[in-house]
Picture 1 (cartoon, rainbow, N blue to C red):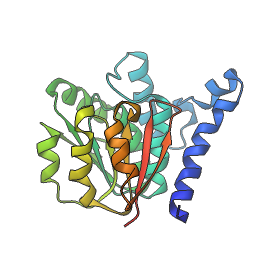
Picture 2 (picture 1 turned 135 degrees about the horizontal axis):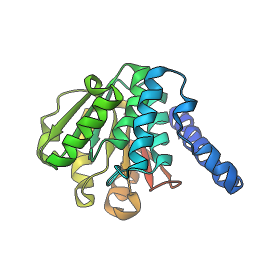
Picture 3 (picture 1 turned 90 degrees about the vertical axis):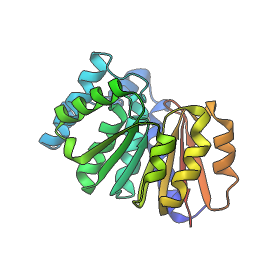
Length: 219
């Protein structure tokens, strides 16, 4: 395992260490309260995230623990271009935006369901990050193939049977040193096999939330 992957593994482990603390402390560390924000923009995004949880507007989304991991990993690699496959209502996208505010990057996110895409756009607008996000509607298996940009971080959280196809389509676009993240990996053994048997990739698994694989493209 190279130095870059060791650093990323350290970040993931840091987000996981709270499982060893008493339950009361775990709740404290899992807080995403706007009162903890360091800037007004961060406060605005965290407020929308908090409101989404309270209103149960996080349909088919990641748990908070995974959202925090997405933010930390994105900021750690100073990502400029993030691609998300499976927007849903924008919850995970807003976690990416927290990092992209710092890196001055952009999120391109794909959603097949028109209603969910509309809700996500509204959440991004409420958070003030609509100019930092491009929502592409349609079948991502087709739409992702049209991408031309160099990807720093890609997050796969869509139809489980399509994970390997998504991986194959985005992998040539991911820069060396970039990350491929995938959610609910316990449900997709074929994907796990794909990212653990490719000599160009190095993977670790963060199971604190919904099961997140973190894969480094080495070359």
